[in-house]
Length: 571
Image 1 (tube, one colour):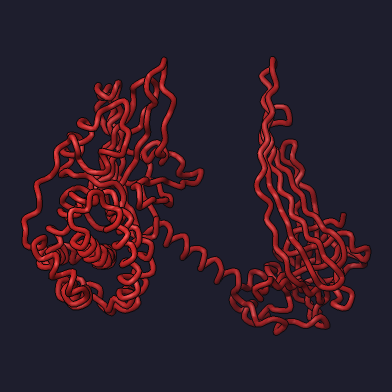
Image 2 (image 1 turned 30 degrees about the vertical axis):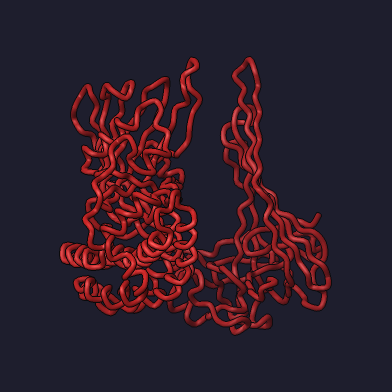
């Protein structure tokens, strides 16, 4: 295991939490013993994160790693300490785990940076943890005080009547706690069950039973749920088996990000439109009004830790009067493949690199004297009742060449590298009277456009420039319209303010009644300074960060201002 460089800071931060646990336990049979046990328990959570990191980074060594990690726990006396805390302060343990889990990503980063060979490090996890998270060396007084706990055999598991914080603090209406504990037991779980705590990354095998009255089985959905340390989530290997056919049908693979509350164990999914079906399997934690005076029906989707430290997920979805579905997921192995969050970051980085390819330092590209102009074309396109403006901007250089892929200020363009790396983005131009033509496909093509007017930093900008768009799905009488508004306000002194909003309004007309609804998104605002010089508009925020894009006026009236591919009209 690489050096745990965050260990000291994390353990120091946990002392206050363990002290609060000692004061909050009710009744504290021995406050000093309780505080000592809590301190060692909190320190051990850092090792738990290192264990999870190994499961993610070195899955091939999982068998050896699990054996060595279990041996370290046994040698440290953790089973006895945990059993004591479960009996005396079970409700406070999630807070201890959450305090460490809040630094999980930071510690993952440190471990990855320090390790040259994760497989070798994780094979020797017992030796490394004994050196880096040595409880007897870190906390000798607490370690000595807890000696009876560390050498005692763990207490037997509690019964279903008082089966731990999860069962005692969760509503399961209209089914009973005993039913839930029995279901978890069939999946291999052992009471007591605790909700919350660290969410162990890995692959969970899940079974969802859709029932009538939570009794008669109607269908079964089985799937693999992979949870990643960066909150990414995958739904794979899914199949649906109905009561009528009894033939499994494959389900689509889905992905999303997740939100996890370590204090309660609630796991929520944040899926985009393409993956919205995930909500049928990972349903939200909520309640619904009962029917005909019955008690409210509850949705539950919670991460659990059983009495042996194993991870489970319990789900219960109620609908109708008493019908619903029941889900149990059991951790079966390390994560497989890459997280959708990591993939999205890599894709975003690749897009950023592609976008900025052939970009030089500010003003290291063509000067204003080398540029013939930016040729701007605008045309309306029609789709149903929608009219959309389509704009293109082409860089014309005075050497007779034209660049078709302008993405930022032309004054920053590495012309030589671009011509070599993306030759398809270059062509030649000529002027025929008042009209410009581009050589495309071996033929001269007229361009119905005009050259933009560059900015002058001595004059600056003045006034309010607004972009507004609206797009209707359906019809005006039976559809929805999405709107976007983006506004820049400039002062001649070099200040700018940007604000924006979006909204959706819908109308439903069934021939008898008409219903309308509307919603709007929050406004967003930026402020700072700007410089408009040549074909570059540079913005600088209060934090000193700058951004540069191409810009120009449509004509000498300065009523229409193009900023980075979007035209703003002066109001």
